[in-house]
Amino acid sequence: MKTIDFLPEIYRERIALRQARVWWGIVVLIFGVAIVSTAAAQHLLKKSVQKQFDDLAPQYAEAQLQVQRLGKVQTDNRTAGHWAGLVTYLEQPWPRSQLIAEVVRPLPAAVRLTELIVAEEEAARPVTEEAGPRRRSRAAEPPAQKLAPPLADLEALRKAHDYKRPVIEITGTIGDVALLHEYVGEVGRSPLVARALIKSHASPATAALDQPTTFTVRVVFRPSHGQPDAETGVADGDGARGQVAQGGSGS
Image 1 (tube, rainbow, N blue to C red):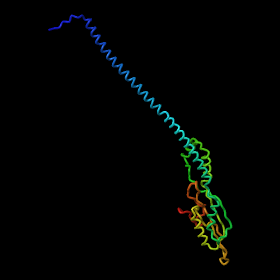
Image 2 (image 1 turned 60 degrees about the horizontal axis):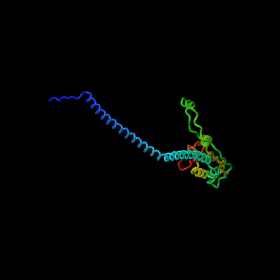
Image 3 (image 1 turned 30 degrees about the vertical axis):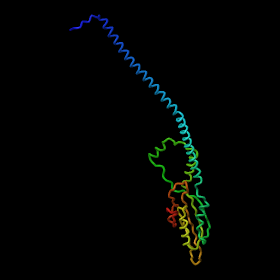
Image 4 (image 1 turned 90 degrees about the vertical axis):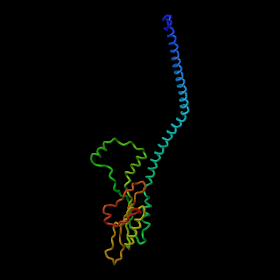
């Protein structure tokens, strides 16, 4: 059976509007609760992060101080190393008294010295520059960073002394040439000696006169501490004229 609705249309619209308002209120309430909850959660999270930040602030400040102290220690250590290198290099030359002792100590009693010369000779330097376009390109490069004073002094000293080797030449007379060869061999076994050689020796023209043999022995010493351990060469012609004894265990 068909239901007949005698209510006017306006009443049905009011009922629908009332229901719609209820739903709108529910939706607004839900969104409001969600917004309030989100804002509260964000506030709590912000307070938590701020608290952690406040707790870590002293540790961060201490870490920054430690980094600064570490940087200062590294700088001081680097500076001390520069000065130590310079002081060590200033102490590097073999004492001349020690070198003379190495030469004189094994002298046979039969030797009569007439001259002892202590000098320095320039060893061969390694080739550090290349000719051609690469050399020109290096000349076009900007100047290097300025060195610290101890490093600059050390560099200047190295350029002046790195490849200088002490040399001792002794001249004298001896009756038995075999003793002279034994002496040169013993000097050559010294750890300070790079090469020992008989530079020259002249026997008397008349053996009946029983005159001693005049000789000259040349001793070239190894690089001292702080100098590059390059192979030390003898002067041109020395190897052809004399007999050489290599010094040290490695020679």
